[in-house]
Length: 119
Image 1: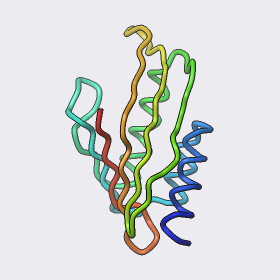
Image 2: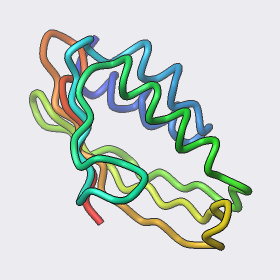
Image 3: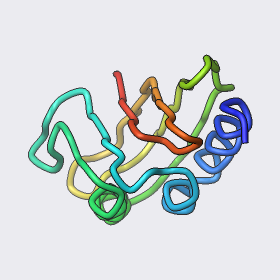
C-alpha cells in the first residue's frame, strides 16, 4: 500500500471517529505518539501500540459529547503525511471546547511509526 493510500484510509477512519481500528491496522508495535505538551491526563510521549490504544480508550471515556469532527485531506510526502483534524467536544467536567490540531504521521515499511500533534 502506498503512503497516499494509507493516508487516505487513516483520514477516513478518523472522520468516522474510528481511531482504534485505524491504529490496529496501520500502527507498528513500536509506534510513538507525541502530544504538543504533557497534561494532567496525558504524558507528552506515549510509546508502543498497546499504550496508545489505552490512551485512546482513556480519551474516549473522558468525552461527554462529540459535537463535530472534521478531518482535512491529507498532504502526502514519500514516507509521511499530515492532515488537520478539528474536534468540537464536551469533555466530562471540563466543558465544551474546540480542538484543532495538525496531525503528522511517519511511516516505515507501510506502518505508522510516529504520530505527532500540533495545536
